[in-house]
Image 1 (cartoon, helix red, strand yellow):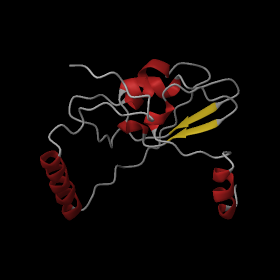
Image 2 (cartoon, one colour):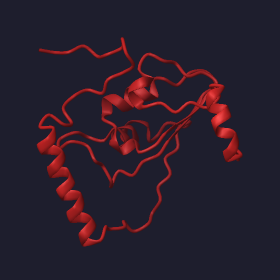
Image 3 (cartoon, one colour):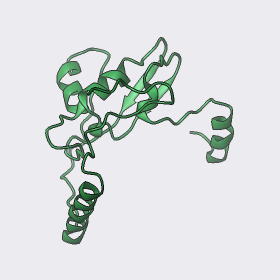
Length: 143
């Protein structure tokens, strides 16, 4: 376990890096320990891009809950796709937490519905744009 006070120093030294998924494009991560959290909200293409970043001596931990997907309608969770494809690979392990699904209180559910409606009104194209990488590494734009 790390001392929480040492984390800023390790981040400044580049030992620990926190990066958005879109910034992984074009990198190979050797001798690294990589954590992808909330993986249920990746598309199949994003998950493939992430998993192919695995280099020599690296280990990946992917966490997510396929019952809590927040992707646009019609987009399949990359985590679900990977479970189907890699489920019988010897070096890959999927752990399932078998707890009853917690449901939000009725007020919480209605708040989330209202926030989704607000988000759709504010950005009618939300969910359709590809994630952007670092400057100079933007994906091609189709017309």
